[in-house]
Image (cartoon, rainbow, N blue to C red; front, side, top):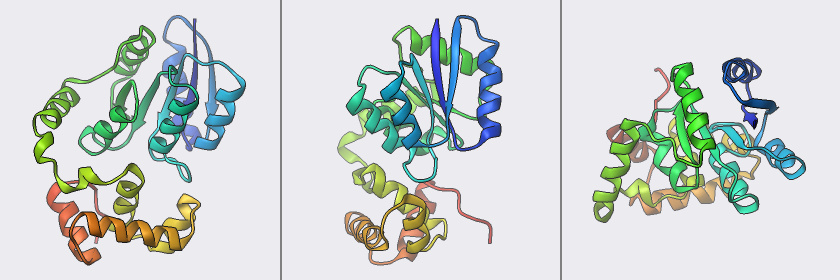
Length: 214
């Protein structure tokens, strides 16, 4: 019987996922968390069979939370849930130790199938993601520059391009503006750029982020 922890900062999303899971057989209990910090607190006190983790929570991101889970509970399966398409975050999530990546546009049956597959000890990889992973392995020697960014640097880059100021990014990530400024400098250095304008052009060209409407 499965014990599942749903982590998402939106109550209505957690409720929707819970309703889907409650219709799935062999689920014993469903718990909820609204932040990465709460996830880590809960898994330290109770045992879960699967954590379903939103990738874009405020403060500690889903990827950061995933990495911390894998440090303390390396065998605990984590299914990443995301509003972002697989091209943007899935490879990073799998490399960080996720057992699967599921977009929130997926059908309820697909979510139930992913949970069952992960519980059996398998990875849940869609056909689209399988193709992306294969391409990543084949082209590893010619990786795009953004693949050299750490997960935190990649997150900061997306936030900069979305139009947020360094102060806003710092507040949202619970870091100091000086730290975010350091991240920005590293990003520009790794991408061989000197300005946010160049960064925006690069992100648009590589389809790494949905930009805000003008």
